[in-house]
Image (cartoon, rainbow, N blue to C red; front, top):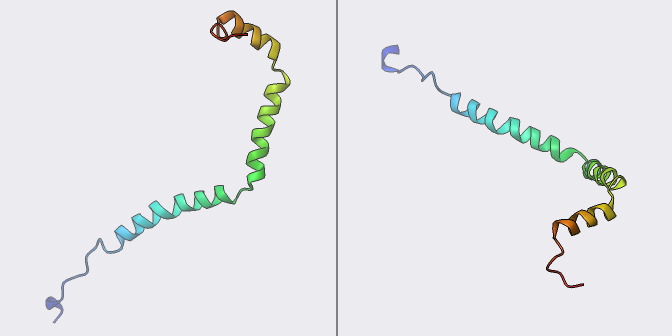
Length: 76
C-alpha cells in the first residue's frame, strides 16, 4: 500500500522560505527607516547647512568666481 504513494518532494516549502527571507528583511529595514521621525532626518540636514554657512565667506567666493570669469558674459 505504501508503494503506491510517492514520497513528498524534499524541496517543498524551500521557495516560500527563500521568498520570505528576501521580502521580510528588506521590508523590516524599510519600516524601520520610515519609522524614524522625519524631524530627525531634517534636523541633521539643517545642522549640516548651518555649519557650512557659518564659515562660508560669500565675498571671497564672489571674488574667486569673478577671477575665474564666471560673470564675464553678464552685463552689469
